[in-house]
Image (cartoon, rainbow, N blue to C red; front, side):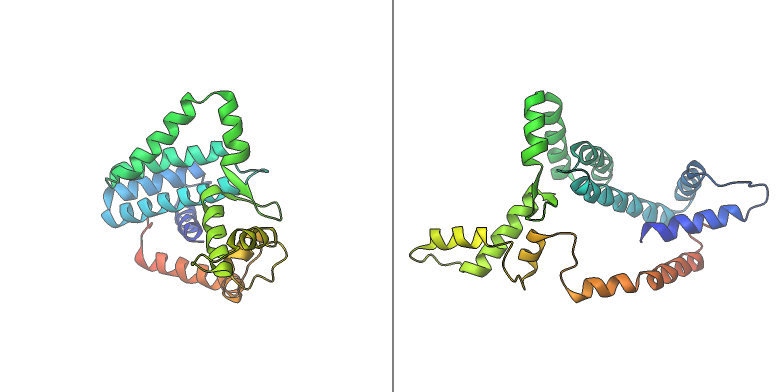
Amino acid sequence: FYLLPHYVNVVVQLSGNDGVDEVSAHGVYEFMLQRAKEYPLCMLVLLEMRLATVAKMLKNAERIGERGSVELFLTAVKFAMRLFAMTHKTDYMRLSCNILLWWNCASDAQKKIYSSFIFTQLTSNGVPIYHDLSVELSVKDLRKQLGKVYKKGLDLYMEHACVTIPERNAQELEATELRNKDTPSHPSTSKSYSTIPEDFIKMYSRIREMDLWAP
């Protein structure tokens, strides 16, 4: 809902101009780009919108299909590299180049293995989540269950804790995420959904007041 008020604002502004019969997505893009060239504040906002769009693409890449979409993920990485270059994020550029270079040189078998088993992991309810997130949530959950100090029989306790993740009452956020990432796990998340229309109106009104995208 950060991006939508901006786009709606531009559409309303352009549709109110004389001589404009219809507003296309291309027209909206060109108008915002022209405003960004003329005004530094618009450039800053547009750059932030590009980053938010890339973040949304990365989130969608995790959830599309049975095991996520590697193709969408790599497309998002390519867009993100432009932002990394503009902001001199050399470490992120190196990581992005490495993954793209590896994917370009990988065999069909390697790509199949990566897409089907490495790129994402499935929760107990069959929801794909990024591999590193799965590891992070698993470690957090196990540490809360078993502690951080070794004790006799820890290997057996660990095995039991792993297989009972789907059955655990899961008051902790990490275990809930591992079971089903689609379900809101705490009241604050559900509360935020109920206030989205109000937030959208406030943001839209604020953008209008700032005249960010005024023709």
